[in-house]
Amino acid sequence: MSPTAGTAAGTALDVAGVGKDFRGLRALSDVDFRVGEGEILGIIGPNGAGKTTLFNVICGALRPDAGRVVFGGRDITGASPDRIARAGMVRTFQLMRPFGSMSVLENVSLAAQHRRQSRHGLRKRSLDVVERVGLGEWAHCGATELPTAGLKRLELARALAMRPKVLLLDEVLAGLVPAEREPVLDLLAALREEDGTTLLFIEHIMAAVMRLSDRVLVLDQGRVLAAGSAEEVTSDPRVIEAYLGEEPGGDDD
Image (tube, rainbow, N blue to C red; front, side, top):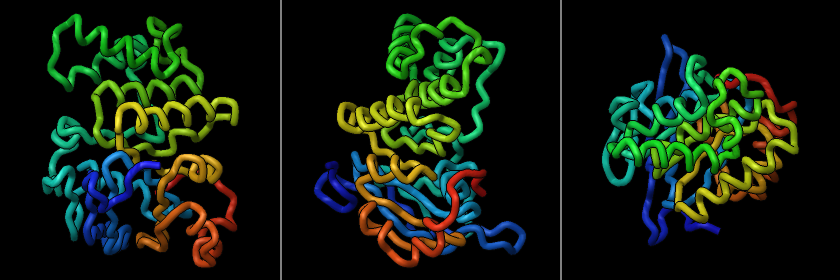
């Protein structure tokens, strides 16, 4: 079990009082939470709860209307996504959009260029990442040749190529059958155990949330409904009423 937020290991991410409106519609309201270094935080909630909007605010795609985001002790509120990624916080997207004219390796190499390194170092780093996510045999194939499971792995590989300290995963298991999910879950666990990577992941598959998370944050209507261990939140009557009674799946906000 990893250290939790507020322990001696330090705080990787501090989201304080974050709010976001869209033309009068409150998407996020006073969202507060901390994530400790090396912690895995699962984020769940019904469709439209604000989960993806929260990721967009944290990673700089959207500027919050209230509150702040502190990463590694530095206030990054409103910073550009590129600057935040270079600082070490990287996200994946639910809808994968690789460069179709490029090979799998070229897609990963392009992402790896965020970190300055020699041409030899760039190629080695990219090949290592491709192998690590299980795409070695596809390295020189066009990205559009990959099946859904392969595209998910490529999206993860592009994020890993940037050497993230904090990795935000937006439904990385969506569209995968159970047999395809297990290797991805093993890889995510290894990222924490071997690399010390802090993970935040949005997920509808509760078995994955229960297996991987140190803590779970539940969003509902843009607010934090509950937070705690997976066992605590899944037994909370408010969470059961707001989320666990509905069928998982579908697009987020």
